[in-house]
Amino acid sequence: MVNRSHRYAKINGLDVHYVEAGQGPLVVLLHGFPHLWFSWRHQIGPIAEAGFRVVAPDMRGMGDTSGPAEPREYGVDRIVGDLVGLLDHLGEEKAVFSGLDFGLFAAYDLAYHHPERIAAIIGLENPFITPSEEPPLTLAARQAGRHFNHIHYFSAPGVADRDLDAAPGEFLRKLFYALSSDYHYLDVWRKPPGTSYIDALPETPPLPWPWLTEAELEFYVAAYSRSGFTGALNWYRAMDLSWEYRKSYAGRKNPVPFYFIGSEQDADLEGWHGRDPLTKLARHHEDVRDVRMIKNAGHMMQMEKPAETTAAMLEFLTTGRESGWA
Image 1 (tube, rainbow, N blue to C red):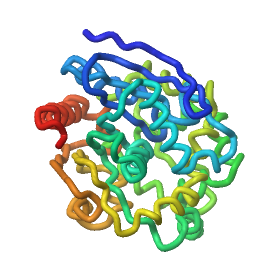
Image 2: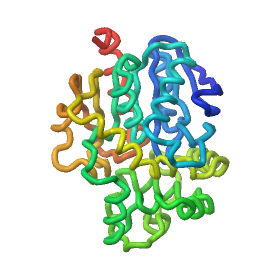
Image 3: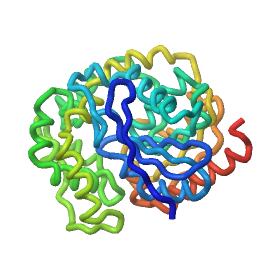
């Protein structure tokens, strides 16, 4: 069994925590919200044992990585700087990046700004999408006039922070369940305007679930109890700023080798990417190498279906290594 080491470094003005295991070509695993490095716990060991150096950081403002209080410090330029700084700190010119949710968009942004630092991207769940005609927070506010919208709920500083900091265990348990294949997440959006997120989320069966134990949930609860939710929520509050940056990508394709793993019951694929989202990958990527879909999984695929997710990632990594990602 490969040992996991917890490390800390000063990177791009942050105190960054990351977990490292193995030796070989570098693979960086990037989480989103409401996640931590721990969301990759099922993948770190097998990938390291296959001959790769695996690094899974806590992203800016989440877990044991520090984060500024100002939302403007969570725009594309800052996040890209974090990833470049991480590579420099590790002494690596490039890496394979795999990400989910905000973590995957961080990898997309790095590829547009510094493609020379990426060997390949393995994307989970979230295809790149063309920036909307209007700022995303404006769009979310209009939707919130008709029904609950979590992005709008997160956007006002102080409101969601207060609610979630007061009940981290209830929130995380309900959200993990709602995002899984055990629930249809978009039913949350049927709740009326003004509903709090905790009240909009469904009640859950008692733990353990087939893919999450009480102890595993408590790891997340303890981490967010230490850090609070403001850093994580600032990723949402910076969405308009990131939208402005991403408009500069118009007419360009992501140039690095790209692999995609989706799950058949993912709320993001259903709710954000329109009809047949996988057919649109070629619009945004010059080099789509492979696409896989995992059955009976929602937006938590690396936890819900760890064996299937890890197997697909390892296949992409080993075939890519053999070809030199060229």
